[in-house]
Length: 291
Picture 1 (cartoon, rainbow, N blue to C red):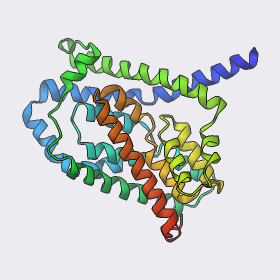
Picture 2: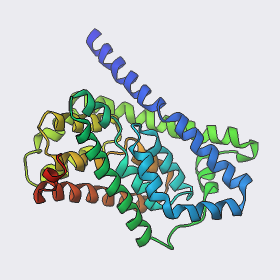
Picture 3: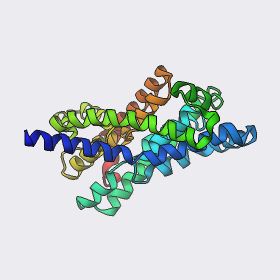
Picture 4: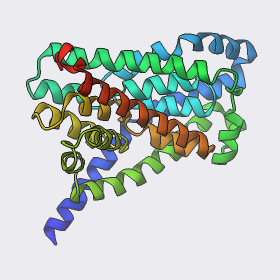
């Protein structure tokens, strides 16, 4: 009984900590969105749209920072149509969660870490530009009012209160999912999932990419650790880290009510991860990059 209570406390503690990390990002995101929708006017929205042409580069750079909050923030901004799908994709592909800390802690050289970051940045920026080119003209105007209606928010009571309302709603949802995932990963870890099929050609990269989709920092920790131990190939490692965007996907599915759009986005993210992983492993590029 004592052991069960200890495990439950461990799961709840980790879930709460992981969830609290994104709350400031979500609050700031919705505060910006509320301001743009209710105070800034069309001129500022047009300026944001023009700046969006370089969005994938900015998104890729932000995603490289060792945190998981930007992916959650980007999902909210995309749902309100403040950023483009290419910028969102760039943030997700570049996000690494705990990768840098795990690599450095495991004794990998700084050159290797920088090479991984360079590959992630290049793939993220290129993927973002291609997505924007393919879906140009399909972006809709800002739709903060849709989010307000879905969340039952009383925006007329002030942007601060409304932003906090949105942020807390999403945070509670993320906490609930983190609790469930934490319980599952307590019995079957992300590390075990990756090891089972890591040595199978193509399937190894696919499994790593699927593990990366788990909306929890445990996925990036497991993938980075397995690569540092020599269990995963460079391609499988990149496949998993490219798809791993922390709780970003979770926030996207919660805030963007167009399920088909979310599923297509997830499939593209997964496809890019697997394709890049296979390219690195089966063409010798990994050796050239010294990964």
